[in-house]
Amino acid sequence: MFFSLFISLVILQRLAELGIARKNEKWMKANGGFEVGGEHYKYIVIVHILFFMSLMMEVSFFNKATSSQWIVFLFFFTLAQGLRVWSLLSLGKFWNTKIIIMPNVNIISTGPYKFIRHPNYLVVVVELLVIPLMFNAFLTAIIFTLLNMVVLSIRIPIEENALIRETNYKAVFHQRARFAPTRERT
Image (tube, rainbow, N blue to C red):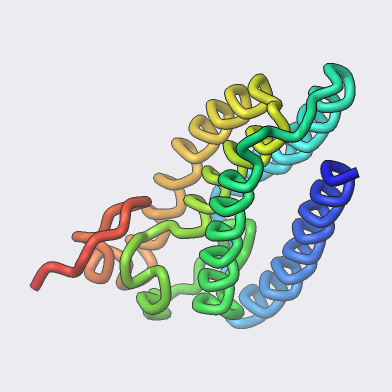
């Protein structure tokens, strides 16, 4: 019961985020934004869909019970959701699941972006690990953590190179780590 309810809520959250992303994409493109790296986006979508399918199959097929440490994993999941909301609110209309570049617009460097370059990717890294671990779905945790590493190793350079070309990204983020919080050096 807990598993079904939890996964349903996470899937509903993802669908709501896709709605926000579509709305933001329309606004950005209407205001001079353009998409880069679109050819890899379908693989990100496939990885995320397969993640939920794998998780549901592993838990149901192998009759996995909720982990005895589920509260610890839920704590990290909840922290990640806080970071996700903070990231979305900080980016506002600039947040998207696709790489949409707004030329000559200053990079958002407030909120979690004051400390790390890619807080939303950090959220996904945490989620793809802790959600399966909450339900003892170790195979899903391993496979999709590795697949996500591959996807991010393709996506992040495409995104950063486009931002460097079209915005003040390099000047703002040259000393900030991608995923680990750092203090600004003066």
